[in-house]
Image 1 (tube, rainbow, N blue to C red):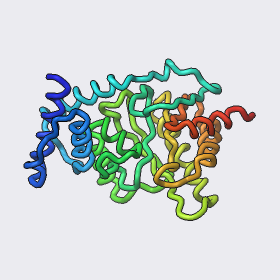
Image 2: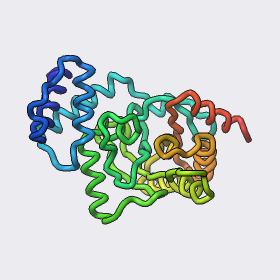
Image 3: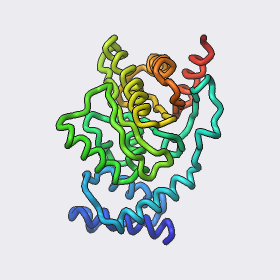
Image 4: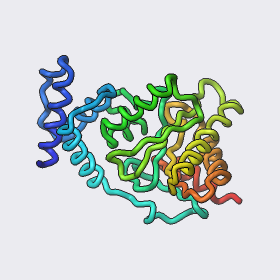
Length: 255
C-alpha cells in the first residue's frame, strides 16, 4: 500500500466514526489530505480502534517520520558533559524519552492542526497515545498537577517513551512559585526517567509557548535543574527557534 492509499484509508475510517463528517469530501491535494488527517486525529476522542486501522496508521506514521529524517542522540555532540543542545523537530528524535509539555487533561491538544508540541507529539505517536493518557487519568481520578510527570510508551515516535509534564501558566508576572514549579517539571521528568532506567531525555522548552513563561528565565531553570538532577541521564535541550538556541548557547558559555 502506498502512502497515499494509507492516508485515504485512514481518513475514510476516521470520517466514518463521526456521522457529521461522513459526507465530507476528501481533497485531491496531498498537503490538504495530510492536514485533514491530522485534524481528524486531533479531534478524535480517546477510545479503542480496530487492528486494521492501527496497522495502517503505524505504517503510515513511521514512513512519514522516516521521510522527515530521524536524528539519533548518538549523532549529537555534547555542549557539556551529559548535556546536548539540538534544534529540530522533537518528533524525529531517537533517544530514551522525549518530554511533552502537556495540559492538565494530559490527553493532548484537541485543536485541529495546532502548532503546539503537545499536538505534534500526539499526532506522530498515533491515536494509541491519547488512549494511554486517558487510561492514566481515569486511574488517577483528577487533573494532572503542575510540576509532576507521567510516563507512557511513545508508540510510533522514534524514541522509546514520552514523559508528560504540565508547566506553570503565567498570567501577569513570574513568581517564585512559578519558578519552583517549572524546576519541578524538569526534576520530576528526570527522576521518573531514572526510576525506569531511561538513559536519555529530550526536553522541549516547557511553558514558554502558550503558557507564556519568559524564554530566558525558563532556559536558565532548565539548565540549572538538569545539571543538578540528571545523575547519569543524558539530557538533550530541544529548541525549535534560533532565538531559543542562542539563549541556551549563552548559558553554556557561563561557568
